[in-house]
Image 1 (cartoon, helix red, strand yellow):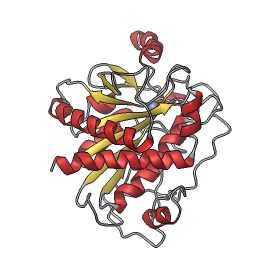
Image 2: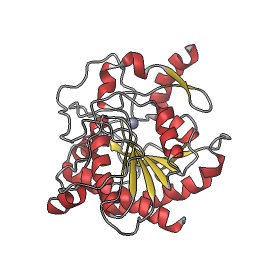
Image 3: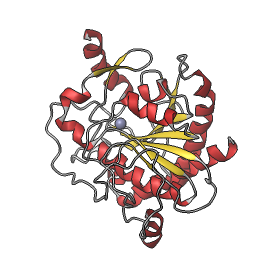
Image 4: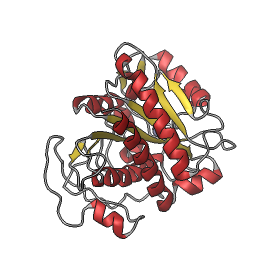
Length: 306
Ligand SMILES: [Zn+2]
């Protein structure tokens, strides 16, 4: 307990992983919830047909229109069937939008300690935000919606760890467990960093062998390389100037990769504390572009790992 209290702020400075905003802070007021039809639980096992106006068709009409989830969901995990056929037919992709909009007001829940495979870690954190108060949780959520629509249109079943940006958690342990449970062909945790204002760029966070995840360390490195190449090509974003080496940062302190038994990486899409990157992450156009690039990286990986 004491160790965690003293080491977490240090980690936040050294590793700057989505800067740990104190959970007692006030929730930002300038971040309206996205308009997604996600009011009731969509079972992780449900496989229903989409109604008209699916994310794919909405997305093809206007590339920056935020896709909605097709079925009612209650904010918890959800499983969404394909909307089309293509290169991802038969594949299951786990999409984990980091943090959650409700975390700011739920310190007692998200500060609960969990075991991340190596050490104690908090259940979740609030995540980073831009200087103007645009939250990382909202950015992650919006990219996840674009990404989900893109993947489903290409034939994938997408499992989301949360289906709104107004809930709390789930704990990072559960985020890993959901991907394991559905035996995802690939899993990605979407984040944006709260790094030093002078630094910018994206980084891929990869697992380090800990026993539990040994079998997926190698494949996750391949996934990371595919994702790095696709994200750089698709967005033009440089690799991080301060996190990792050439855009790759192994991490042994994250439950999301410590506890995964399916190929998994985190992507820190940009640095929300950097003015140039902040302008990008708050742009719907860039969010959609980032999602398309992530979809391309996931596709390259699962196509080469049948
Ligand atoms: Zn984060």
